[in-house]
Structure formats: C-alpha cells, structure tokens
Image 1: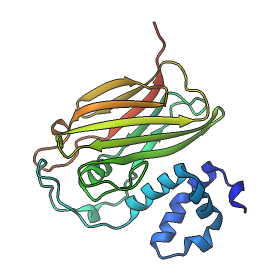
Image 2: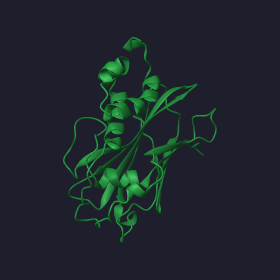
Image 3: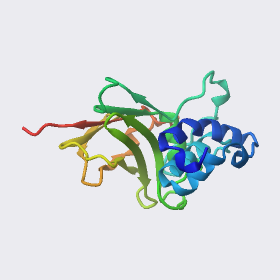
Length: 231
C-alpha cells in the first residue's frame, strides 16, 4: 500500500498496534512502512503516535513538585485492567454534537506530575513549564473528519493553577455558537470556541482537584463540545 493511499483515520486505527509492536522491539519501519511514511509528513497523526508511545512505554515514578503532596507507593500492579487515557461518550452516532470526552484522572496525574510527555506542537519543554497533551482523538462523521486536542499548561512560577485548552480542528466550518463545557471535581465551566477552534480555561486551582492525603487527582475530566443557540 502506498503511503499516499492511507487516510488519517486508517492510520489512527493502526497506531495502538504499531506502538505495541515498537515497544516489544519490532522494526515497525519494516512491518508498517506505509504507516511510518504517513507519520513523516502528517503532524497531526505524529502527535497522536507520540502521545501513545509516551503513555504506554514503561517509566520510572518521579516525585511530585514541592507544591503538591507526596503520593503513596505505586500499586498499579494490583490493577486488573489497563486504564485507557480517555474515552469518547457517544450519545447519538448520527450526530457529531454533543461531542463529549472523559480523560482518566490517573492519566492526568501522570501527565501533570510525572515524567514529561510530548507537547502538542514543537519539542519537549522544561519540567513545570510546558504544554502537555492530555487528549488527541480523531472523529470521522458524514460531515467530515475532526480532530480533538486537549492540552494543559502548568507554569513554573504558578504551580498551584492550571490552564487548559480544548481545540477542535477540521477542514469543515465550525457550527455557530460552539462552546466547550468543562467539568472537573467542583469546577463546572463553559467557554466559547474562537475562530481557530480553541476554547481556553485559565487559573484552574489544582488545590481543589487533588486529595490532600494521597496527592491523587479527585475526578476524571469531562469536556463537551456543544453549539449553543443565541437567544
């Protein structure tokens, strides 16, 4: 199969298998030449590939920054199932909206307080001053293809707060009045989507989201893209 004949949706369906084989020592350039060629010229698919690889590869635990409590010992080996970083909630398969995602709390904690993950655009940034990719998903509908990205920005000079950006990318026009609703612990917020497809949430207090005894994130993060009709 020629690399040019692969669509992004097809590549994304194969990425779990590609990353699993790569971490097992398989030469993915030989086994999946069309996929790897596609990743060389597609920034969006390469971002998702990098996130999956960084998420699935074994890593050493690193301590939380001084502003957060020290977590208990890692007992993840007791888990019976592997937790997915995020999941899409489909209410009506025939409609794109409302488009809802849940991002797992344990994944958020690892991303914010653990080893670095790849940023959405550009190279890795210094610890504590970076944009971290929390979600990257490809949604295919009759209306076209849509990419959803959620990134977190934690600054070194303000480690107690977090900035989140939810972005919807497509060649199709965005519906008017599109908003993003965010629900996380006791935070329930809404922000409009700008002309670039991004909604931004500033100064989310981490102290309200972290259990003081364990240092664990309290709840999964839920975001929903939904057009809101103007009154």
